[in-house]
Amino acid sequence: MNGSQRWKVPPSEWAPMIHHRAEEVARDAEGYFLEHWNFPDDRARSHFLKAGFSRATCLYSPLAKDDRIHFACRLLTVLFLIDDILEEMSFADGEKLNNRLMELSKGPEYASPDRSIPAEFVIYDLWESMRNFDLELANEVLEPTFVLMRSQTDKARLSIKGLA
Image (cartoon, rainbow, N blue to C red; front, side, top):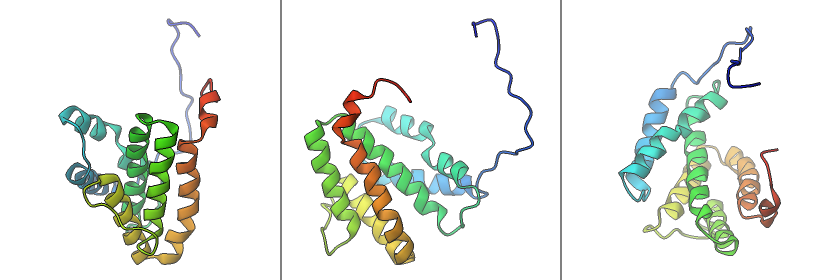
């Protein structure tokens, strides 16, 4: 398709959905991270807000239970923020950081966070609150989250040459 042609989206019977509390949940989650994350400057904070991680989560899960959607928003957000940190690190340092964060995610019997490091206390507190809300469900989500985190520092990423 050349530049003079336009894409035409065919009509659909599907209606887009978003969680009915999306605005409230996004505002709360974004406020939490603006308060607790160590953004380097106003530009970084603005970039974070424009990314819309919580809104995207509410689009991914429009039928999520009202008392759980905020956990999903915070989890997705912290994983993206950690990924931003990892991009600036060597694979070895990134793997070390992720291993530490995974230990913290498992709970106080494994590790305690350094409260001066946002990535540590944010992920620790999130998993603690998820376990306090629903221990079984939180534990079911833990290992799939670790699979994602391990993939962030897998050297196989170096050989990826395209999007697919």
